[in-house]
Length: 222
Image 1 (cartoon, rainbow, N blue to C red):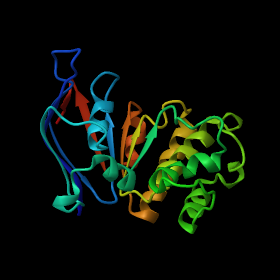
Image 2 (cartoon, rainbow, N blue to C red):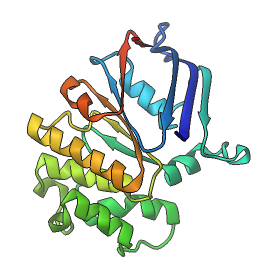
Image 3 (tube, rainbow, N blue to C red):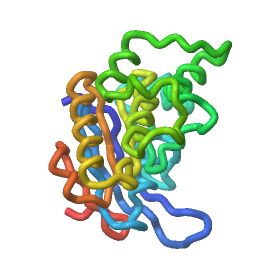
Image 4 (cartoon, one colour):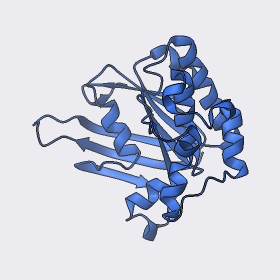
């Protein structure tokens, strides 16, 4: 299997604490796989996701981005924008933008020029797979929780990422809608060969994954 990202003996702590949030974390993220990171609140799931998604750096250890050439690995913002998508529990859709505008935000950030509302065939197909064509001209507050989270997924996919990291993406949904979202993620992985790393406290969802990591006290529990 092709490796996307490797973590080697990663440690992380914050200035406000003397304790390590993450301790000696080593793992590999492979192409076209779904990895779940499990554990109760406070064990370091979000911190680990931020490091995998290159939003934060470890205090000790290495994060190796395997899909880049060596001279391309210094600009983390560029790597994130062009290769990694993000989904969060509270979706963070912008309330005064339509769903279509929200989905296209990553493309606007990438182009850094006049805002355009054209969607290419790839984005149209993602929206169709997610079943939210009917929501494009509506605003986030007009959608159900499940529709909002599917719109957030479409936004994460807009730049054709190699990897999507998702922090409790089903945390605000009932079990049926939570399973629907994860099943859609499986379908998206199959169609586009995208890898997903998903933090969750809902152990029942992990049956849909290829690999499950359990965190306890900042360590991987073997």
